[in-house]
Length: 406
Image (cartoon, rainbow, N blue to C red):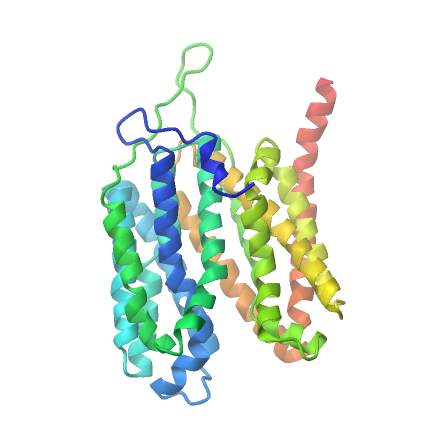
């Protein structure tokens, strides 16, 4: 079952002004994909870009890799609040055009300071994650919103798999540095498509059985933010040094194989996200707990994987945890967004998410330098285990209530 089937079940054509139908949600997902394409595909080639900008050893690659993430996190709450005040569509267009400008500046930069400034602007002026999710949350709610959020994650995972491959394939003709100029066309095209979509409106408030308006969300935000931070931390921490770990454990492995190993968890998400949403839409806390447990097992397996079959198995195990976690986080976010300003909530959620990614990169670098390539996955295992225990504790009261009703 493809991730695209997520919207086929409930995203019917809009029946009110400002509503979003299935085709419109698909259009938003496509625009999110192309915006993510350059942002995710070019950073792995910083080591090839920096020597031409005055950094022969590419010593600044590690820092520059997270510069857009840091400034995206810092800008997300501001842009979210402005979206709630001035319109979600307007701020979504701003994010796409901000990426266009920053990519043009990065591709034209002829010095390391100019390139660094372009990456800062990419992070601060971009923020398509919060802008896209805020736009959707202003027009959808409940399962429709969680399916749409899950689809957006599928778009990002597809870009994460495909973008580095395309950038590498184009490299013999256009260097990765100048590809920023080419990639600027993608968010610009996305902005043109998005300009044709309606300004979203909140779904009408439903009445309760006694005729009173239904209250806003009572779901607490703190557990959502904590789970988001730890989940991003635990999954991202294995990314920076995975290739080095695979080459260390599997002597003679080729680049194609290591690339497939890197992509396997994301491919799992693309294949199983729709079915996972169906199974866990009504019990997201149980799914989060199971997801963290599988992530912990998968990361722990990396530390002892010394053959290709075992490496593939632990990557698939991590993929199962990644799928469960991301889908159930989308369900929790959709529930928390009900009755709240979506721009502010998703802006804060992006701040938390990006904070988890930055923390993961910093801890991975320190652990790798001190203890070797296997150390980051050990740190991720510990974080995932603690989160699994916390999620299980939240799940137990609801399980007891269901059992008592029987």
